[in-house]
Length: 624
Figure 1 (cartoon, rainbow, N blue to C red):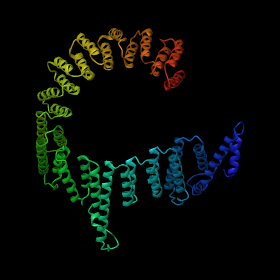
Figure 2 (cartoon, helix red, strand yellow):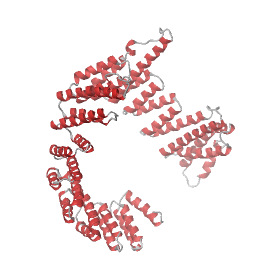
Figure 3 (spheres, rainbow, N blue to C red):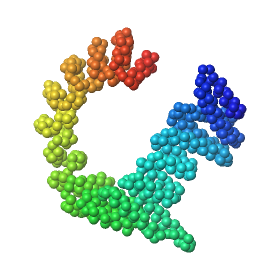
Figure 4 (spheres, rainbow, N blue to C red):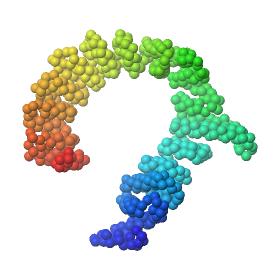
């Protein structure tokens, strides 16, 4: 290593002389010279590591050997991203090891000559990698994370500048850069400029406006705190320019005005309002936002929902002498919320409005409380809102399901049956509603289940009926005769769509083996083996059934494999391997393996062939 670059080049040239074109030889020599130069550049830091006792001579030689190999990989013509990542990870691991060694021996000097030299090299490798693979965002973010960890502020600014120039179409990157300028570099102006540039690319991005709005409020809060500290210290504020407008959040107000012109919708404005509520000096701004919301979105369910929930925070909580008095205050707040919701469903009698009201009642009911009286009030309120929405036919299908679950938990079974019947009447084509009702009737062991199943099949579309057929067959297995259950399975194969019939065939075969044994399963398989479509699992089940018999026949197993390969041989390399494995067993004929192998090679295509060959080789060598 110490002989200089000429010796290194000469040594490399001697390695690759015979038959190599002159141009390739010259390129290899240049690469070797670059690698040797890189190693020589790091000799100073390696000497320091050995001199101060952080590394031994043997470890230094190992580092040189490893870095030489890594350097060659990133200097060659055909570059691979994984080589750059490996090199960077090695250097980061080296930094971590140096940190631990320093802590162990208590040595904290020479960081400029050691760590910062390595950090500089890592930046250089990251730069080369991101220049080559500009579209790899994760690689860029890894560089950003490294800069943050080592507090390389100037370098990170450059990284963000390059990243945003190449990827201006990603708002999240603009937000990340602006947040770093605001929170780490404490530069509100730089963050503001980044947000303004971002909004030129993304003028209708809600997230950008939300974070810009938050940033301006943080800037105002920061200035207010600075001013307060100066005033407490009785310092002259003449040289500091604290504008009252900025201190009161005027810049944030301008952002809000601009945002609501570009982005419509109550949800976005409520998000801005929730951000403003985080700052205690924004009462005037909050009022202005709220007034605008009430004027423009008086008939929006989300607006009513916000106004109702606002009552929970309307009065500040005070210390209560007892849990009872605290529960009473919570109850009063919830009553005020419900009065607003009652007004809302009167003014806006829609499904969405009732959904907001019921969701609120469910949330409050699910909150834990030690006060039984409060819990009973919440329960009564929740059940009442469900009933009212149901009577007005403004209850959505998912809410019917929740209502039913709560009724069952409360052991109100008659009411649950009534609700389930109403749900299937209102959403007659919803398979979920029918499934819910039928499951309830099965649990109740109710009469008339068969007629309810028939009623469901009349209104539910064939393409959606599979869950009901499965439920009917499973129920029939427990209460009906074998003949009746088999009739249901056979009927399902005709009534369902071909794709759905695949599932029923599997269940039919399982049921046949479970209730009638091998002969019945074999009979069902024989009746279905020409009735396409099939699933691979259907054949696997029959193969497994055959193998479980004390006197299983290899001829039958071959038949099942051949039928399966006829359907799935072109796409399932593992099926061919399983067939070969069977022939290699004590029952099979190993001489058949060759012909099966060549048949597989003809039927499989592309990557499946490579997968099959590699697994077959492992099988032959006993590793699979």
